[in-house]
Length: 284
Ligand code: HEC
Ligand code: HEC
Image 1: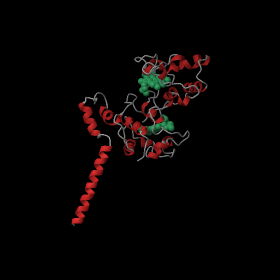
Image 2: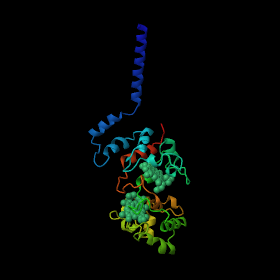
Image 3: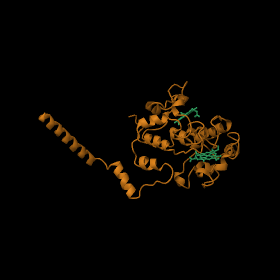
């Protein structure tokens, strides 16, 4: 009995000292950091989603796959609409749109399996501009267009071809392409012209400082004032329609289908999903 007790005591002692050594090697505790930041007045609790930003995103807490699995199964997780797995629940394109299986970690990492098969993101990299980020954050244009409007209408195909042919400022562009952006009801019935909302490099009134009223404006891209001309977001990449934001905004329907365009593009769960990808999209 005495020997056993001594042995247990030794083990307990060992455990304590290992734990203390480990603690001194570790970075300061998350909670203590938070308390210090609160005292130093470094915690901003203004605006929407402050808790998620301050306590999770800024402190880069590891997001686990178990949380992502829940998100994919939860209605209204990213804005009003059914859970993702209802429509993307298997790799079989006969029962799952695009053969995209969002019900498993492997499926999310694999992406769409129906041709053109494609990945949704690159693990470890920012994913806002990748397919998944775009599908959750970008509204199809013109703003408010419904998802049952065909994505291969003649005006959309003409723009695609113009970009594929090098996006030149030629007679064809001036006569056939530029007017498409300045005419109401071109892309769907009862929709304003693109230039109603994208008419100059100033926001307001022009959304994202995007000017679709001239060749120069289109090639300059978005946010040229906020980010500077050199860092503006290019929306046309000559020869590459699929990589051109202009094209993506004409054909990609925000998910879940039917979601209100005014629905928050930076929903906390969208931020957490994108952070999980940035952290490596790990399955454990
Ligand atoms: C009601 C059914 C439905 C729901 C719910 C739904 N989707 Fe979709 N999804 C579709 C359809 C249909 C397409 C293909 C047609 C299209 O792009 O409009 C699609 C396409 C996609 C694509 C593009 C795949 C590719 O290769 O083109 C992604 C990514 C995607 N969905 C992600 C999601 C996410 C994430 C959710 C949950 C927030 C979600 N979807 C919810 C029906 C749905
Ligand atoms: C009623 C206003 C409205 C109309 C009309 C409209 N847009 Fe937009 N556009 C917006 C808003 C708001 C955004 C901001 C992002 C979002 O909601 O997805 C945007 C963003 C964009 C972007 C992304 C810019 C970036 O930051 O990369 C492109 C490209 C775009 N629109 C193209 C078009 C095209 C092409 C048309 C016509 C087919 C069009 N828009 C019509 C309001 C509009």
